[in-house]
Image 1 (cartoon, helix red, strand yellow):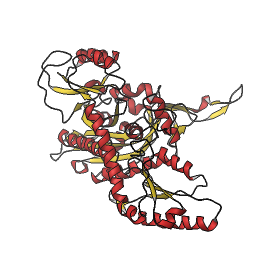
Image 2 (cartoon, helix red, strand yellow):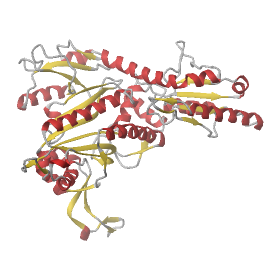
Image 3 (cartoon, rainbow, N blue to C red):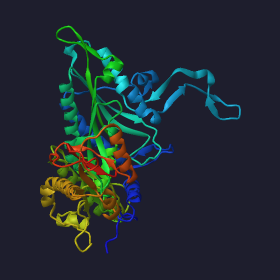
Image 4 (cartoon, one colour):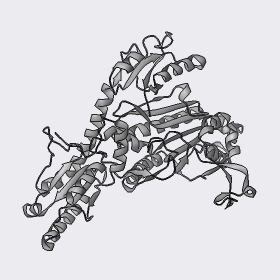
Amino acid sequence: MKKSALSVTREDNFAEWYQQVIAEADLAEESGVRGCMVIRSWGYGIWERIQHLMDTEIKKAGVENCYFPLFIPLSYFEKEADHVDGFAKEMAVVTHHRLVSGEGGGLVPDAESRLEEPLVVRPTSETVIGQAMARWIQSWRNLPLKVNQWANVVRWEMRTRMFLRTSEFLWQEGHTAHADEADAMKEMLRALEMYRSFAEGPLAMPVIAGEKPENERFPGAVTTYSIEAMMQDGKALQAGTSHYLGTSFAQAAGIKYQDREGGQQYCHTTSWGTSTRMIGGVIMTHGDDDGLRCPPQIAPHQIVIIPMLREKDAEEDNKVLSYASSLQAELSALSAFGEAVRVHLDLKSEKASNKRWAWVKKGAPLIVEVGPRDVEGGNVAYLRRDRLYKDNGKPDSQFPARAEFVADAAAMLEEVHAGLHAEAKARLDRNIHRNVTDLQEFYGNSGKYPGWVELQWSKPTGAVLDKVVDQLKELKLTIRNVPVDAAPANGDCFFTGEPAVERILIGRAY
C-alpha cells in the first residue's frame, strides 16, 4: 500500500489536509497577528509568477500601474453610502498617531495625538482612486482612463484561513473610467475574460464565468461578474471579480468630463480584482496526498536537479556536481510556454532523499536526481510530479539517457500542465448536477463532496430573493453565478414556479 508524504489525506480531513500542504510545502505560516500570514519564499515565488504573467495581460489592455495610499480618509467612504455599508464591519481604523507610556506600564495611544479625521486601512481603493480620477479627468479626450495597482488590503475577517480568507492579503485592483455604459461594460467583460483565461491557462484551473445575483454584488455596484472554481471537496471558490459601477462612484467623487458638445457628464466606472486567494485555489484544485502539484507556468522552479553526493569521495562528488551543473545549463536554454525553462540546482547540505520529498511536497513539476551511476552512464533519474506512482503504488521513476531527457523536458512540462487542467476539468464537469428536484435531499444524500447544482430561475428581486437566500442559507448553500455560456432557460423557476429567464449555479463555498 502506497504511503503518502502527508500525515492526513484529503478524504480523511480536507480542511486539515489543506493546512498541512501549506505548512509542508513551505508556502506560508502564522504571523502572530490573527488572520495575517507570513508568505514564505515558495509561496511568494508562486505569487510573483502570477503577478508577472497577469501584469503582462493587464498592460496589453492599455492599463497603467499606479500606487495609491494605504490610509484612506473616512470621509471618502461616507460619500458612498452603499459602499461603506458593505465594508463597515471589516474596516480597520487608525485614530491616533503616537504612543506614550501608560500609568500601569506598557504603551497606550496618546490622547493628545487623536487624528482630526480617522483613517481607514485600505479595504479596497474605489474611493481614493475616485478622488484622483476627479483631478485627472477634464474632457472626453482623457477617456478612457485605466489604472491598476498591486497592493495589500485589510478586511478584518472573523473566520480566517490562509490564502482563502485573511485579514490582510495581496491583490491587484484595476479601476477604469469611461464616457458611457457601453464602453465601461466592454472593459468589465474584458477583465472577466482575462481572469477566466488566466485561471484556465497559467493556473490550469477550470472555472465558470458568470454574473453574480443581486444579493452577491460588490457594494455599490450595478452588476458584478465572477469566475468560480470547484475545489476537490466540491466547494466553490470565487477566484476573481469584475464590476460595472455605473455613475454612483463618479457622482460621489465628482468624476466628470466635458463631452464633445461642451456639456458636463459623469463617468461610468469599473473595478476588477483578484488576489492571493488564487494560490489557495491552486492548492485545493491540484494538490494530492503528497502535497502541492504546482502548474508549471506558475512554478518558481519548473525542474529541480538534486545531486546525490556521498561526501566521502570528493573527486566523485565533483564529477556529479559538474554533470548536474552542465545539465542545468542545457535545460535552462530550453523554452516552454514562451519563456526560458526555470531550472534549480539544489545544493543544500542534506540527504538527497529528504530533498526529493521536500520538492515533492512543494510540487515542483519535474524532479531530477543525478548520482555517480548517472554520470558514468550518461543518464538521469526523474519523477513527474503529476504522476508519482505506478498502478502498483511504487514510485514511477524514469531513467532515460541525458540527451533524451533534455530533448523531451519542455514538452513534458506542457504535458504536466495540460494533464492537471484536464483532470480538474473532468472533475468540474461530472460534479455539476442538472436534474436535481430536491436540494435538501440531494445535499443530504449525495455523499461527502456533492458539488454544484444548476437550476433554472426567474431572477427574483427584493423580498422574494431574500426568501430564496434564506432557504439556501439553511443548507449552507449560496448562488455562485449565472454562467455566461449556460443553455437558455426553457422551464419554470425552481424556487418561484414563474417562467425561468436564466440558469444559476448553487453550491457550498469558501
